[in-house]
Amino acid sequence: MDQFTLNLIFVGGSFLLYIAIAIWARAASTSEFYAAGRSVNPVMNGMATAADWMSAASFISMAGLIAFVGYGNSAYLMGWTGGYVLLAMLLAPYLRKFGRFTVPDFIGDRYYSRTARLVAVAALLMISITYVIGQMTGAGVAFSRFLEVDTNTGLLIASAVVFVYAVLGGMKGITYTQVAQYIVLIIAYTIPAVFISLQLTDNPIPQLGLFSTHTESGMPLLARLDQILVDLGFNDYTGLHDSTLNMTLFTLSLMVGTAGLPHVIIRFFTVPKVSDARKSAGWALVFIALLYTVAPAVGAMARLNILTTIYPEGTRAESLSYEARPDWMRTWEQTGLLKFEDKNGDGLIQSYNEGSTEFAAVAAERGWQGNEMVTFNQDILVLANPEIAGLPGWVIALIAAGGLAAALSTAAGLLLAISSAVSHDLIKRTFKPDISEKGELLAARVSMAAAIVVATWLGMNPPGFAAQTVAFAFGLAASSLFPAIMMGIFSTKMNSAGAVVGMLVGLISTSVYLFTYKGWFFIAGTNMLADKPENWLFGISPLAFGAVGAVLNFIAAYITMKVTKPVPEEIRHLVEDIRVPRGAGAAVAHH
Image 1 (cartoon, rainbow, N blue to C red):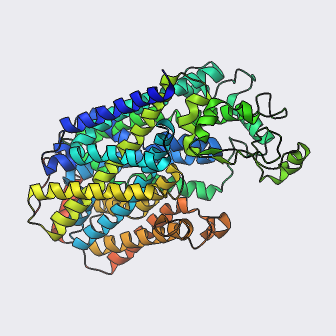
Image 2: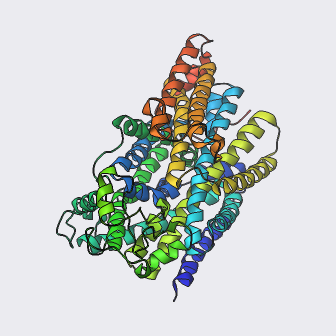
Image 3: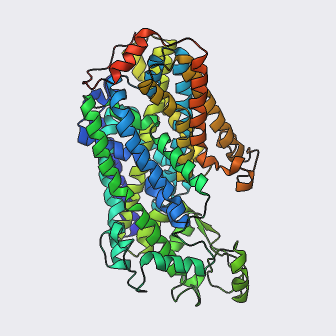
């Protein structure tokens, strides 16, 4: 059976499964659409949360970022995992006890303010739309290769599939679909990693293989990778080559951004009790760790495989002939995500760091006139991994289904967060309180459809690789929602004026900083300064600014609180009640 047919069977079969689940679990009420009727088992919710959490950025892009930078990009792993612990321990149980459907719902009621609710909705929309661009980008990359269409066509197919099961099923359908998607993506990610670890180190456990001996050279695998990279003028893989300040701020930004992500927080509103919110957070961490501990091994092994493919006899010998390039290179070239250019006309492929002044003399001596792998989109690395390692066709088809499962599961969660903010927080709680449940459900579905259209258009013009685009969303969440939620739970004194001013200061400062370097609303060509370290304020990368925005939010909120009216007594009691360790019942009625 040819590869294309296998891909169709695996991808098509997984899509039919997701749509069947959505039809079976179709939401019949607003409670089911927003919070799955608060009836999800903690283990199932943990698995669904893991799928919601492990997006295209985790599955498709993270290993690619680690592969091409090395230790410096382990900040993605540390920040995302640490942030999840922060969310699970500090926020999730208390938010579940408060008993609302959405994050703006909590902020609006805790800060007794319509303005606070509207600012939270604005922040949520910016965060979720930025985040969903990364998912759509990842889905487009996966479709373009495995269904052999261009990336924009792939994006449209992905949008159509999400439209069917997210609009139909709401949170109830999305939850059970995400359980299936987690199973697909974890199998798809782990099996190729096991095969490749066995090939390179004779160790079937990738996490251990990373620190094992590379069988061909007899050296530790990471030492061998360091040696090859340095031989080609690149930075060594295991050293830190960014500023410690940026790495620290970026890790913090990802951590507090994680704890402020609305689409992850609303997952904890779906369980019956507060204790179940804690249990599902624990299970989610277990399910997330299964993938996150494998990612560094996948990144390092893939980079080593690529370099040894191009230099089969070693970096000092002749490189690979363009005509002799393997099939995986030919197939990825067709997508436009991998490109070669024979700059010195010798018919061979030279891949090296042409920007290295130390290596320039060596390159000239060898007759090289520039790096000839002119395009290698980092997002293709995990998807190409089975082909690079020469694994069976069914493994390639499986990873196609896994990559799409990762992108679509998170996209669905984000779209639900967007639609519930519009239908519940804007329409029901702000502009039309007398809307019927049927009308609210229709508004939720229409707003989700509109969000899919916007996300698809933006996904066709992304501001960066999937994981980079997602990192911007974390910065926005860190600087806007996280401080308001933290102060809402742990401070009885924080008032509505403080929360509103803090959210606005954090959101505006971070947005302006991002847009200055990445373009206004991420539209290409509208940036005011080139995204280079010499242009950054105090050397702080746009990716790392979320932590600074969060600090500005806290400071602005505190100063405003000191010069404005104190919190009403009933709100002070409400905050104290949230922290009393007793169970929570159904959602509080809205008036």
